[in-house]
Image (cartoon, rainbow, N blue to C red; front, top):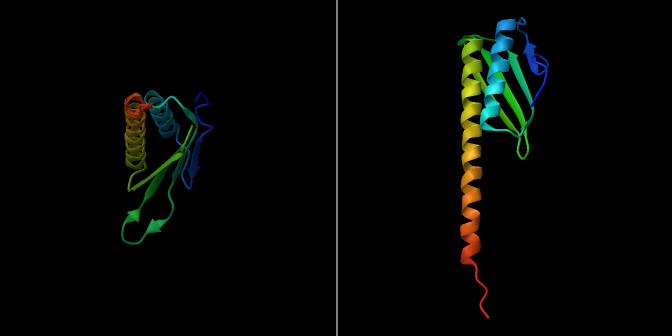
Length: 120
């Protein structure tokens, strides 16, 4: 996934911040370490509306188009930076688990092939 730094970051009801966009692009490039088959990514940062009881809430959504199933992770917090960090931490965990499942499946396939024997 090689793209321009700010073309896949969407700000909704928020002022564009170069520092926040740099943080998001660094975290996107960090995700490439855990999963090399990311086709496209999109990050949506928004302040949906004011809650009467919770105060101002921010939402960060990370959408990853992978070969296979797409992954979408959303997190809400009272700070946009906390929401971004939590969303990317969840995405990192998800990609690590996905990689571990692929590795275990790869190592289990030859064992299953050995069990099947044709008797004459």
